[in-house]
Image (cartoon, rainbow, N blue to C red; front, side):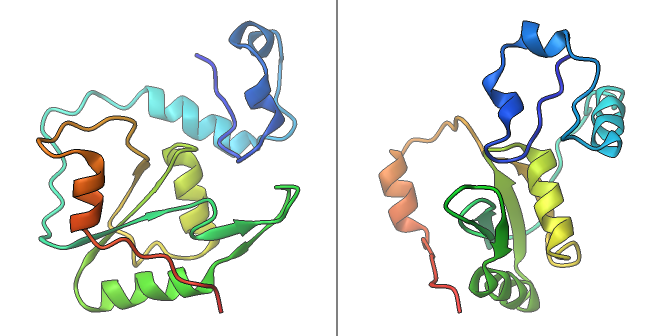
Amino acid sequence: MIIRCAAFGCPCNNYSDSELKSWFNFPHISNNLIQIADAAREIPTMTSPVILKADKTLFVDCDFTLIMWDENKTTWKPHNAHINLIKRFHARGQKVVVWSAGGWEWASKVVSELKLETYVSLIMAKPEWWVDDLPAEEVLLKSGHIYLKDE
């Protein structure tokens, strides 16, 4: 199994699987992340679906939404307006899901770094596909797209 770094713009994402297999370590990935990835392989297959019991749910992306990268994509800062939005939705009893195209590991790291664990109900990879009777633009227009300027 190849463990790819979940970091946005990480150089390991530019290598093929065969090149990565020849490496003995990933100096830019902590041992903890590798241990977490190894442990995740041992999780048994889910026998029943996870049910998020909520009628209203806020879905929030990570990169350029919860965190803002500098122009070189080497450092980031929190997007406080969106962080406060999460806290307001949570205070109203609504569920919050954080996702990332970088995968669930990256989304989990962002939530942890921003200390949002108590406000977030579910962390996941951003969906690549979904099946619906409506086209994406209709679904997204019916829901409430929110993007706030940072403070």
